[in-house]
Every structure is written in C-alpha cells, then in structure tokens.
Length: 329
Image (cartoon, rainbow, N blue to C red; front, side, top):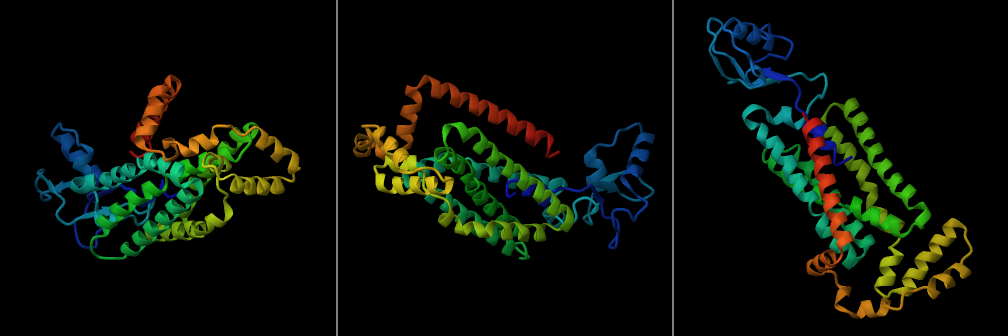
C-alpha cells in the first residue's frame, strides 16, 4: 500500500490556468478547447503544455503567456492531492518526479538490507525496517499540515519509506526458509497476493476519501499494528543453524511442529542427523560475518549465480520501465 500511495496522493488531475480569483475548472467559458480553436485558425496545433500551462494574453489577442494566477484542477477524479496543493505542474512538474526518484533510490537499499538480514537475522531486520517505516509515515503525516518545508520533508520521508519497504524481500526469504520445499511456491504466491490486495484496498480508500491527507492517516493506522510483528514471527531456523545457534533453532522447529500438529521427536532427530558437518566450521570462519566483498566473491565464483543475477536485473529493469512509462502517464 505504501509503495503505490505515490500514484494516488501525488496524482495530477486535468488542469488549466486560473483566470480570476473564484475560478473553478468547469466555471469559465475559456476552456482548453478555446485555445485549440484559436490556434487552428492560425494553422497551429496546440500542445498539451500550451493547453494546461499557458493562457491568452487578453481576449483580443492570440498571444500566449504563462499562467500568472495559478491553476484550477478537475477535482472529480482525484480530489485533493499534494500536486494540487503545492501546484506541482508545468514548470514545477519535475519536483513531482524527483520525489519518486528519491523513493526508488531508497528501494535500492535492498542490497544493504540483504546483508543486514544475513548478519543480524531475518527477524531483527524486518522489525528494524518496520520501525523505520512507521517513523517515516508519522513524520510525513505531521508535516503535511505544516505550511513550510512540506515537499522537502515529504521527499526525505519517501526515501526512508522506500528503504523500509524492502522488508518485503526479507520477508520472502524468511517465508521460504520456514516453509517446506513442496509448499514454497504457494507461500511465495500468498505473499504476492497480499501485495496486490493492499494495492486494491489503497485504491478503494483513496477513491472514497479523495483527500491525500486522510489517505495517509489510513496508511498510518494500517501500518501501526505491525510494531508487534517481532512477537508474532519466528527467526529463520536455517539462519540460526548457520550461526551455530542450534538450541534456538530447535525451539523454532518445536513451535512449527506444534502449530502444524505434526509429530515432533522423530522429525527433529532426523533433522539433527542430517545437519551438515561444516556448520561449526562456517561459524568459526571469516564467512560468518557477511560483507560486500564476500558476497561479490561468491557471485563471481558461480556461473549459475551470475547468469541468474543478470537475468533478474534485466527482467526487473524492463518491468519497472514499462510500469513507470505506462501506468504513471
């Protein structure tokens, strides 16, 4: 829900120049169609920029000038957004795009969160990212009512939201590590369905409220209960075993078997009998603490990993480019 809030809360409705103080989008007879008629008489074609960002110098002239009294917006589709409040259109349109680029830079922090999850554990990393997300959302919400520095704080908070939202990838790793091989595809799909469901819920909320401030209040209320996630989710037993914390891993398995109502002793003994002999050796080696250099070395040493990494980068780049190019027009 947080990922796609940008498209609704910074949506850009149809707009044109304000012609007098009490002007509204449907009130004045001088609509963008008027520009088209006048320009066609001059054998010209009105661009979208001219329709939305310029106005006639006076009613007796065909000269265009920039909007000097602001803009009026069609409020039927979006309602109040940050774009309509701060007038992020025409010569300020790049500021709207900048906020999303900053958010994307935060999402790139998934490289860092992956290493943190290997060093601190999946559970602690997820909880840390959830706390960052809650703080960023609440800070943004408070400054949305501030008359100054609203866009600056919004952009900074969007960066931390992008960084925090990478807990989705860490959650996927944790989910796969506590799920049996036969159910991993189903578990991963359920996580993806929840992502899509959140997008649908956000669209419904935004459609009903039609106010970006109220929409962010709903996001705050939705995210706040996740502060208790540390109590609910277990640590990855696979990560615990790799760290040599066998007793803690056993407790996690006992909890899983209890919830699944499966016999305990035989399965645990089978698990311990197949523990790799290099667990203790890996714990004592330098590979225990993951670093960028170690990850890069392992990637370069495996042809299969290099191939998969390049394929994933290509597929993700194409998917994001198509999405940004089509959905946000």
